[in-house]
Image 1 (cartoon, rainbow, N blue to C red):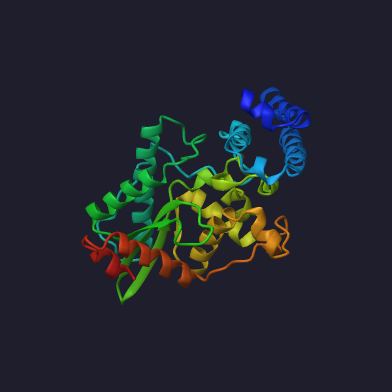
Image 2: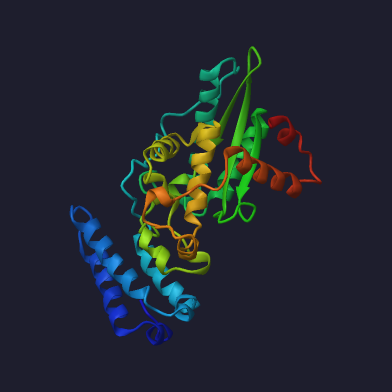
Amino acid sequence: MESRKDKSIIDNKGRELIASVVYLIEELDKSDPNRDKLINDAMNRLYEHLSTYPEEILQNEDFIYTIYKLERMLKNEFIDIDSEPDYDEDDIKEFPKRIKNELDAKEAMEYLVYETRSKLLSFSGCDINTESFDKMCVSSNIYVKNLCKELKIDYIDLKVNQEIKNGYFHCFTITKFNLPNNQKKYYLIDCTYRQFFTKPFSNINRIRVMRGSAKGASVGIYMTMDENRKKIAEELLKKGYIEATPENIKEYLDGIVFSGRDYEFYKSRGLDYTNPDDCIPEYTASEYLDMLIKSTRMANKDKNNKEIDDLF
């Protein structure tokens, strides 16, 4: 796993700890009930040791890549949450002929999710049980956007990036349905959310060690720290969409922001990164949307923004 450059960066104890993690990942059967704990404990020992390294090593690209590669050995495994999507390729969904109530709107969302997941799976060649949809959010949003245009559904295509402090790059879509009696229903659709619930980067103690673009811990860990966030995450993972209420939008985006925070964020504020109560949100749902929509409008200033202006 290590190159000669790595050996000059990581000391003997560090290499021994890395070797022990590799051994556990490769040799322990996945059905072993103790496997996750043993690997997690071994990773904790490694992170604890690496956290004693000087900052110049922690910021070294070769060092970061070595630990990143080690973590990625668990890329096809999922953390302890019901993340398998509700998807049956034989249960073909149909778009309702007319959207006259909330049930019709939900059927329309099920159709969008089914068609998008089918396209993503045909592209990756993987099975729904093992596919994490890693780094497929841009492709997913293109599929969703094209379907919305084809079916005349109002939507806004949003991207989390530098507009939100500590935001981890990710794409998602919000749709709007106009129902009778001036009622409106909004839904957040994210068909690749499962990528945040794999085991790589799920050990929160990596925060003490990882720097640069590899900083932080996974969205999934923060979503499972709180029962309300966990409930929202499970619904989105299974259905591919959730109702876009202010509460749901805030919890969804809080998880993404939390994942981008590094050790210095907590240390400088006297906070404990392992304590769920110290994961303090910085924005309201309205503030999140104001930042994201403003950025979207600026990026699309030369295009027809009718679907954006009509939506909010």
